[in-house]
Length: 279
Image (cartoon, rainbow, N blue to C red; front, side, top):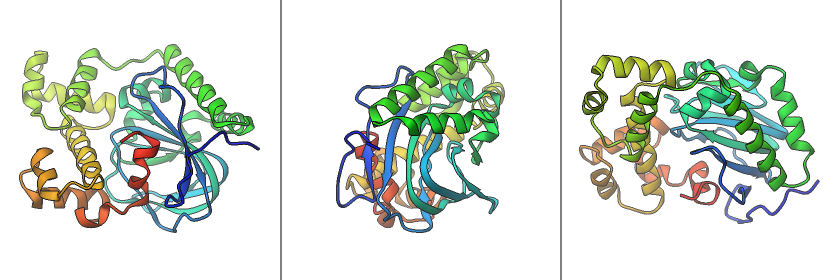
């Protein structure tokens, strides 16, 4: 079976295929990962400010959640898991990874998406038998371009047909936090909306599955860790991304990854982001 024209780099654990054009849904991103049989055991999965779909098209992937429970197959991963999430088994797997902004995930996956929080659940727990049909359909295509096109059409159909939508005020608050790279005070956002701080926190958490402060922390971490991978010094990154000092940055990197700023830059899952997601 052909796999299109994935990016080849002998330094990477995976060959990576990227869509030829952006998704029709704002903020949705996809990448195809073709395993080379080099993935180390106990691979860390780095938190990201999105709901992640990991669709396994061939082979096996097994992960362990923060409660110590193992899951095998295709998964949905919540935005910003707390403890370090690890892939315990990767056996010659080809997979399509889709990153969904929380407000898009809520429409596509239903209200249960807001309950993901920092967890990982099997895809069929949210989509039922449709989960297997999706993976079988994607695996039947001969190129990654066909897979990307089909997946984007499927996501768009589900989004258009969705009956539930995130409140415009909550979507606006998320977008303000994201555009500010997480360096923003939450109380003024509530004031601009004409809401109390308590109301913003309650609506935001109920619809997106995390609090405004947690969203800001995760988005800030994401920009900081990619700045470190790009080679910027930790002190400079801390100052530029809104941390109190370098020690504050160190604590947050440790909380999200179990690593230090000096060691997180070697993580395989971060090393491929510039190829897969355009960082």
